[in-house]
Length: 292
Image (cartoon, rainbow, N blue to C red; front, side, top):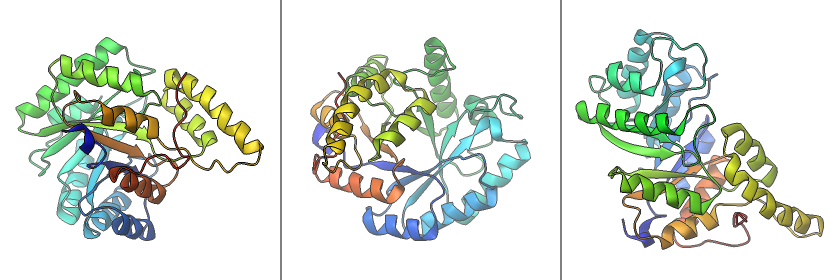
């Protein structure tokens, strides 16, 4: 993809969007924009299917998170997939492991891809998680092997595949990870995870929770300056990933890649930011602190 087009084909991630929020998203974003629906532990299958159907009806593309270790039985997965396909025409999933110590019949995302009957359920494309800063509980070598295994398992079932990365605050780390991915011969589309416009305290909370400690250290130094400015009476508001977008837009060796925004500051605000970025409107005092 040409560098100038990087910000245009974005996706966002939402957690339990209600009817009013979905309607607002449909007003703001282009038709068929992918909206990834987070697999929060407390949501019921009925709520998940209803939300997916609402997104589809609004003209958006629902992509549902499936957390492998949270699936109680294989029958539960079959029933969920049938309902998603029948009521919301869901054809794309993001399959993740899920942070559960005692899994059910599926030990990890690979097991769902291999044994979950996804193709038979009408699924056509799978998103696979990846981690530019590593994973707090999984060794780097295992992450690399697992990525290869999942891509191969999808190919064996004629499932299209794309990669969705965990968010990071360090543009250079993201670039290095993407270039290494391409150097290893992985040419699949990549959705580059980044935090949408969010308050600095919220960023700290999510960064710690998700294990992106390396780039969090860089964020701390920049955030301190923002907080000083706020104390001095300046309006700081939310910060967005402008520095990351600028670095990725300037690169010309990333292959097929696009932003994937985590909506920690709210899905509607994230959608507005994403659309502005897609039209080249970066800055306006919302740039992410530059790592030192």
